Length: 285
Image (cartoon, rainbow, N blue to C red):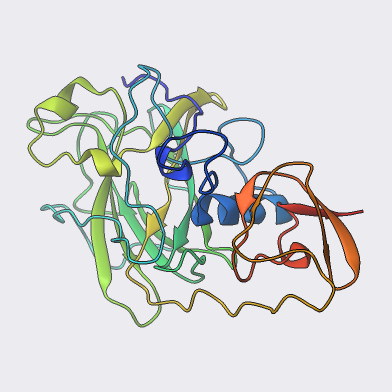
């Protein structure tokens, strides 16, 4: 069984020196994920506050990350389908069935496009081995598909997959945004001994995993090759002090549209992040 991951800071969220004075202290996807979490309850979080996927494992070593959702970056890596995929799986987000043995596992996350905006109605088709490492090739046990909600989020309820010869512990998934190509990939568990010997394993596809909820809780954010406009920026109104490009710190004050705001977390202002639009970053007052 893999060791639990711990909540930490994604290195992509830090500037080049990682210091508090860095103007890139908070990256675009991190802030958007925090804003999404602030506007609606997430079924499973990995700690108090927004759960950030792909954080450091309990060993203290930070795995190589799935590419950050930022202009010009690459999408989540592809992986082979393998021999066990079956089409026409039932639509469901809960793959656990009565009497099915195995450690409960819940996987949550978001699907983003290339401009770090969440993508709704993305198809996620999951399949996996049971606790003994076997796939159901006659029926649809531990197979199912679902769609991201309006916030681009998903939740999968399943069990921790078992091991079988030649492979480390993993989940299979196909993702397809409306009108876009299919991404086939796999997700992995941190600190698995077989991660070092599995020739398919890719550390960029490691989930954040911890004990919780009577089983295991995991998180992962996908980035699909979906072209997106970064979003129209709203011009700073006359007399407002808020401005694009300014590195704000928690507690800083700014005005926008003749209203005062207090900064809640450090970030560098970008178009589309005007104080009224990002309650995770600014509080009126």
